[in-house]
Image: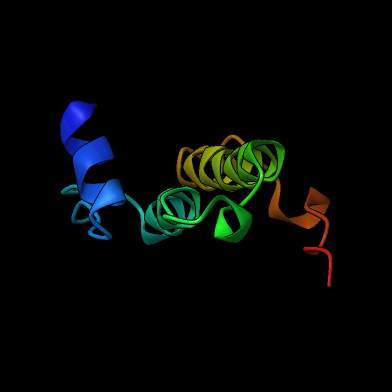
Length: 77
């Protein structure tokens, strides 16, 4: 954690961890802005993470044959 803090303070960011989905890394980047006004509010970051995880879980369930594709609703526009 201290390494990440030092990187953020110096204006640098940690590289995307191996096997980390880009959508999650983008949320991480949005929380690492040096200026607090430029950071995404933590509540918004949590909402985005919940959305990503919901999509990942749905994908895994589809791959496992546990979801009827006809029952899925289209994503919000």
